[in-house]
Image 1 (cartoon, rainbow, N blue to C red):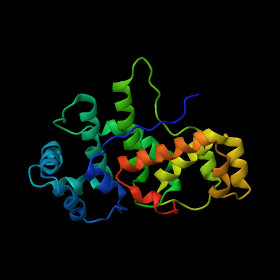
Image 2: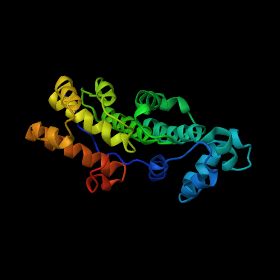
Image 3: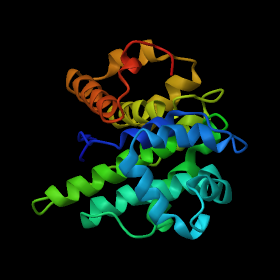
Image 4: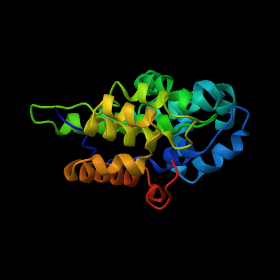
Length: 229
């Protein structure tokens, strides 16, 4: 069985920055707009592609009308469309993020309020799969969070601020040890320090290579400097 091998992809800096924020529904639009204004070309693109929501007045009107989740989806759709077609669209296509929404719905209960970390992971997986599909030579292995991770997370307590990292780590542990063994150890109260030594050298190397690749893709090296997930 093929095991997870993550590719390095360049995720848009402004989108990554926003998805790392904890953004409540009531957040003032200016907080988001400040990040977008750092890229004048992107800001102009958004004004053009979201004109139907602001009527030629301002991007802030579109953000207020859509709310952060709706605006976020349409922003992400621009990058997905470009990855597929090679150019940016004239309008946004929120249906392009349906797979990402499914991932959020699947694991949202394990994250914190206002958190888009699962969306960030979903965006990474979406762009990675598009990259691998373009590079495939007769074989394509879709990157996804496997079934069984859900049941394993239900055995843990609390919510994770960096749920994307937790999902990747649990995926590797499940692939290496199997769901029954990992579930049994978690139910017994075993921590990562006691589980990690059971991985084979090859699986340890693969896990850290994948985590380093993901960290580089989302511009987040601090995961390797902090032991809290």
